[in-house]
Length: 492
Image 1 (tube, rainbow, N blue to C red):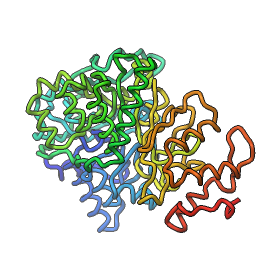
Image 2: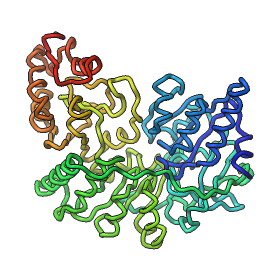
Image 3: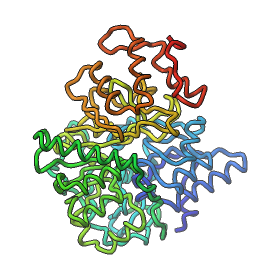
Image 4: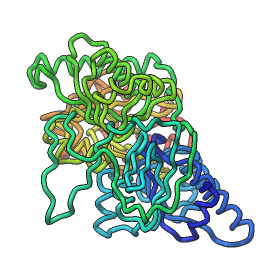
């Protein structure tokens, strides 16, 4: 059927689950047709909004088009498009942020509304109800299991030979749940496809669309230095025998800093070849596989640019032995993360001088993207690292403040903070010691004395704070556009 005909099945108030994880593996044609359907309803003065479950963020053809059409009844668990972010922060799209490992199981538990429709992208679908995902899995296995109806986007841009890349498994719900038998990143124990009742498949929409994965901006001096600092720190940990000499699996977040970190790990001769157990497999990983630096990468999506994807599709047998794509309920599973002993590397939006991290909210109120999987990995890591440039907006924002304006990761879970200036190893330190280490090693020199002065205005305590002044840097930026000129006397 056509995408337009498929969209006719979905009506105002319906709950829809989508495949994919980031723009990889996300459906494109049917969501766009849905957005057009919503606009036609709105033009006629009729309501049209849908509840939206995705694996994580998606491409413009999904999140962007539906947000632009003002067709969001609710949205979870993570997003990153400009239009959806604007709709959320303007109150037009009710949004609840969630740990990515929680979504599928909370749907099955009945904590969240049941999806009526699943719209999934596939590279193959059979008359027996086998659906082979493309480059992203996300929550597709669970929504296909739970939905009353399934619409398949059969994307001919992806070869059917992707069969064999996936490892599909849905855990049994308590009290019958068993352990997940992953003892190294490359272990496979699930199915090669999603098996559904073929009677649930309403139709197949054939497409020829690239994943809407944009390239990363070139590395600059700051991101390169952060990457080098991460690699140098891990080498020191190996030499100190706090990391085994054979190394441990890596989890890395998304974006330019993550790519810089992976590049630095790959080029450092003192870092041995390693596995990855992560969410998103990015461009840098493909080159590291070709150079035998990454032995195997387990992830939820192959979020790589068309140029890198063509390399994979040009050598499928090689990469099939090096890449495993699973659902986020498995990639982000706390039991497996703890068992494998992951070194986790994620990006902070903001941190405070005591080691608490804000990953989600600008000035404590405006949603950026969401917590994603950073909480899943950080809380359960062997060694948890957060990276961030020390400043933003041409130095007008300091990434380190007295108290984070929104709290996602507590000081109890954050082991190490790294910026272009240095490394703050917070393990085994008191709050006052942490503040000294962070200010001395991670904060930009422009703001070091300012933060030291803040502590002088705090009463003696286990975690010194002046509640009248702890948000002064945020308030100063909000009113003047810079944090550079904070005078604590004005606030205390």
